[in-house]
Amino acid sequence: MMTFTELLENRRSIRDFKDKTVDLETIKEILQDSCLAPSASNGQPCQFIIISDKQMMKKLSDESKKNILLDFAEGKQSSSPNYVDILKSEKFNVFYNAPCLIYVVGSKNVRLLDVDCALAVSYIMFSAVQRGLGTCWINLGAQIRDPELKAQIGMPDDCRIVAPVIIGYPKAIPAASERHAPQILRVIS
Amino acid sequence: MMTFTELLENRRSIRDFKDKTVDLETIKEILQDSCLAPSASNGQPCQFIIISDKQMMKKLSDESKKNILLDFAEGKQSSSPNYVDILKSEKFNVFYNAPCLIYVVGSKNVRLLDVDCALAVSYIMFSAVQRGLGTCWINLGAQIRDPELKAQIGMPDDCRIVAPVIIGYPKAIPAASERHAPQILRVIS
Image 1 (cartoon, rainbow over the protein chains, first blue to last red):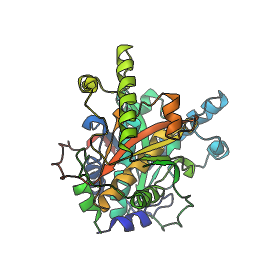
Image 2 (image 1 turned 135 degrees about the horizontal axis):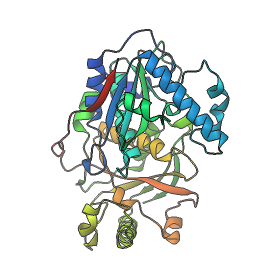
Image 3 (image 1 turned 180 degrees about the vertical axis):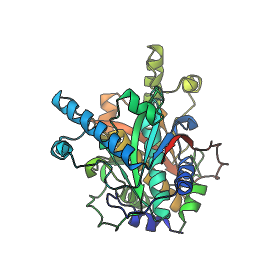
Image 4 (image 1 turned 120 degrees about the vertical axis):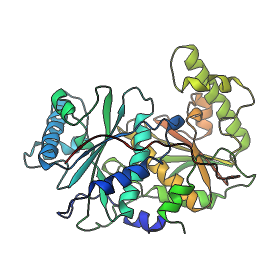
């Protein structure tokens, strides 16, 4: 049982995983923990799609890559321009070699959906670390627009994807990426 | 030193605080922890304004209440309609009796600012619990529009408030609010 300090020290964005499946019960336990996250007016709007089928993950990766590149071609930025080159590579799978993908989705009508889902994702991240698992929020995997594919993964029409989160057993815990000190603009006491 | 399970069990939205100040060093430690939160492309866009002056908190509460009510009058919803009545009460301070308010803000140009800040806020929430403190994300306190007041709290023009978070020593840990089981739409394995 890790302490908060250990969780902080061990939580990393993980993009390289052992070839080991994560069983569904473990994923469900983690999602159960995430339900304890606060949400605006306790609305609890998060819904989850769990995908561990590699072919489906490849399909979703291809769909999202295609749409982000289309957006760039049209001058819209649905992702950082830093990723254009890598997205053009056919071999690049946005979900890396992860054994499992969780889409955190919710109704387009929820005003603070992004925030509510992000809070739940932080719970998923910590709950995963606690179980020896690693996660990464893969924004490059969020642009699923093909109605048929959306139906295949069970996305209701009124929903949108907020967070694609990959999860698995990390090959290693990478060094911490650099962090600056908190930027405190003003203290009024 | 709490375990993650204890953090989960003890984290509540706190709106009733002891009459005890939180010292600035503690707030800074908590913000330091929040810098370990992941952010899109490690952009670390969160900036912080710390306010423990009660008069300033009252001013900010009044400003935000006024703007939310104006929005409602104009048919815009910057908050849930459930709050209209209480917002009309002159005595109601959106920050309750909290000894301290942290505004988590960031540049309007950051595409995933809401998500980046929400992840940092979850770290603030857990780091606070770890120190015997309680927090609450007060969305009703976010609508600060008066340029003079924004200048007084040190808000740069290109920034917007994502999260007003109150923090202090809880009078009590309230019972957990009800949570439903995780809504899993589909499992594709």
